[in-house]
Length: 65
Image 1 (tube, rainbow, N blue to C red):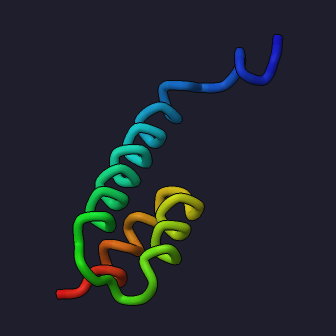
Image 2 (image 1 turned 90 degrees about the vertical axis):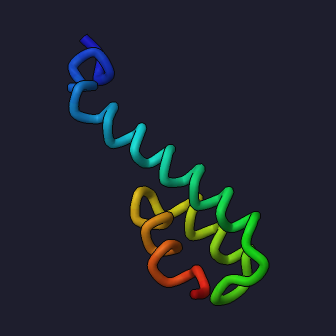
């Protein structure tokens, strides 16, 4: 029995789906807005590489009001 066979996918699947949805909305928003708080490329890296928290950090601190 391998690691993936014994893994509880019922717990992990909703987290992965939420992460992907947040990431997609954050990237789309980043592309559409004219200016962000800081360079857009940095925010793109934050969104893509800081799992689950990256998009949330972007929506709280990266968007200009």
